[in-house]
Image (cartoon, rainbow, N blue to C red):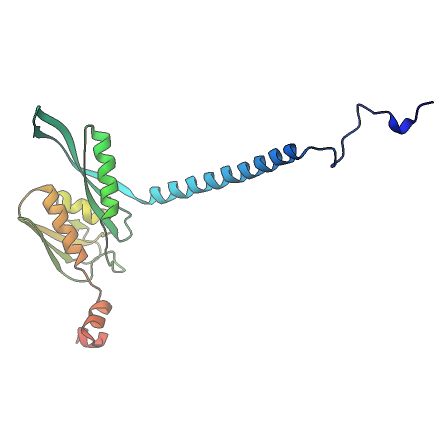
Length: 210
């Protein structure tokens, strides 16, 4: 007679001791991989949400050339304004062999040179400001609610993407879009709130209004 315990049942489920260590390791790696994929998806979603906050507007695209030893090298230059309409704006310039690459580089350059603009409760600027870049000069002054953005050219694009909705701006001097945009950025970077001005001068806020 043969012992029944010694017979093997092909339909029996193997126990934990019978499972090899390699199989357990594969299962753990699969679980870890699934977690990593989930984290990666979450990171992509957050990145898309951050990118969706920023708006991009192309101010100018020009075909430029550079004289080299073998002749002329043609490329494209793009002037791009980047802003979130919440007080942050930047102007970038990108050059590449194609238009898409130039715009992409301009967006990256604009995000590297962001300026934080102090906004009032009526989406205007606190004080008058004057900016200059090269031969371009820009004058920006606050306006009453309902005025809108009274500006032209690249200055209007910079002010709109900064989130300013009531402002008066005047272009003085050069008409170059890049210089005007940078002059507007200089004017916005010089803006200070009344509290910041009082703190810099070491006086109270009431003394500024008096």
